[in-house]
Each structure stands twice: as structure tokens, then as C-alpha cells.
Length: 334
Image 1 (cartoon, helix red, strand yellow):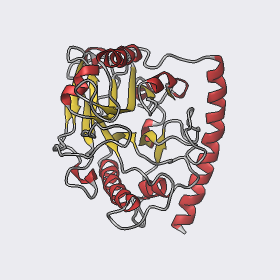
Image 2 (tube, one colour):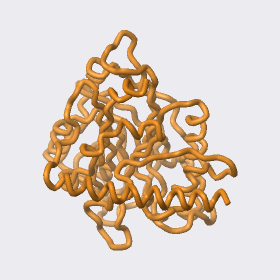
Image 3 (cartoon, one colour):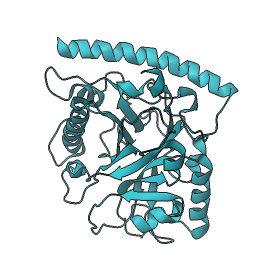
Image 4 (cartoon, helix red, strand yellow):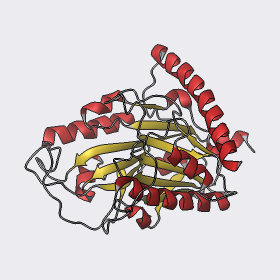
């Protein structure tokens, strides 16, 4: 009965969000906001798989020259995102090429290096793919928040000794700051999950894609449940490699129920039910990059300013997703 109840809840929830998503999309045709508009109460969080970003020119599976790195840097600067959860970045040196250290603090996965075979599209070797965050240094002055690094979520490595770990930050209130309306911290997780299980049943041997994703779902569920039990606000951003907007998607149901009888966490997702603006295949009409968060944060998100940015498509095979949160709305709940 619990599974049926969750199924109905999910179906109705998705139907309502699809309708509201359609209305938002219609409004965006009239007014398209610029991502990351600065405001002393607005937190703009982005997630972006930057597609094989390498430390050196002409390396990796998407070779780039210095001019292309500079174009990405300028693009990110224009968006004015406060926090960028990134994926597929080789190392700290690669991240610094597009996130200047004068403007950003960079927190990148401690995933150990390993050798890879040649790329499928070139003679270059594949490089490391690390997750992480870039956090604007002026966020403390503007928003009264600072990022505190937590240990990587190593269990997300799946079946590999050197798999993709989750990078975990906590945004804490700066003592004496008067920009935000609450001192409650925000727990952030940047992830990059196993590919090639985009819509199938989440099951199988630990060595195949859906089996690996199955283990990663268990890890994420445990992380979510730990935050929920502690009453902590949290945001998970990244490349889930999963079309979570499918009706009653198995992974989404698992994340909300934690895979255990009697366990339920009401999750929300930015742009819930809205089809991806740049689909590559009819089989994959929905996004695989997501920002999900606990229900208490749903009243903070500014839906009219939350969107995928098609301009980022010229730099990567993924579009960046910008999720805008109005921190002043905390005040209205007191």
C-alpha cells in the first residue's frame, strides 16, 4: 500500500508540476531573465558537466585551445553564479583555467588519479573526471555565507577504486553578517553518477551500469535520510545520468522512500516535469542534470529565474542549469 501511495503521490505531483512548468515556459517566451542576477538576498547555484575539461591545451576527449578556455571563463563570469557544482573536470589546474582564484574558491574531489584508454573520437587518452564546486569569494560579504568543505562522499565511487566521488560543502552563516535572514546552514553535494542507465529498471549485477547506479542510489538515499533526520536543508546538484522526470521513475521513488519501508523524504526538483530544452534523442527527452532539494527549500526557489541556459551548449555537450534561491523568504517563515 505504501508503494501505491507513493506512486499516486508522484503521479499527481508530476502532473501539477508539468502544468506549472508549461506556464513558466510560456512566460519565459515573453521575458527571459539573465541567469545569476546579483542581489543581496539571492543565491544563484549552477550545475554544469563541462565535458572533459583538461588542464592543458589540446588534451583529453574534447581538446580545447587557450582561446576556448578564455571563452568559457568569460561566459561563467557573466552568469554571476555564486556557486557552481561542476563535473568532468580533470584536476585543480583545469578548474583554475575557468574559475580564476582571485574570484573563486575551488573545492574539487580528492579522487586518486588513474590511467585511461584512448578516447572514442580521437587518439588522445581520456583524462580524469572529477566533481567539485567553485564558490565566489565575495559571497561572504554579499550574502553572509561561507563554504566549509566536508569529507568527500567516497561511497559514490560505485564499483571502482577510483570512481566519481561526491563533493560535500556546507554553506554556513558568517558571524556578524546581516545579509541573510537565517543562520541555518545549507548542505550541498556535487555528484556525477553512472551513465548508461538513463531510464531502465535500476537493478542488475554490481559490474553493469544499472547495478552500479543501484548502489549509488543507496548511498544517496542514506545521505538524504541523514540530513532529513537532523533537520538539515540540503541541495544535491550534478549529472545524475538519469531522466528523473519520467512518470514514477524508479530512481526518484527510491530517493524519496530511501528504499526502506516506512521511510519517506519529500524531495523537490528544479524544473520538475519540464522537458529538456535541447534533447539529443527522442528516447531521452528529459534532462539528466538536476538540482534537487528538501521540501523546506521549495518556497525559496525563484522559478521564473531557474532554467537551463542554451548559451552554454557551445562549450559542452551538457547545458548548465541555474537554480535561483531567494534567501529572504526564510524570514517570512518565522
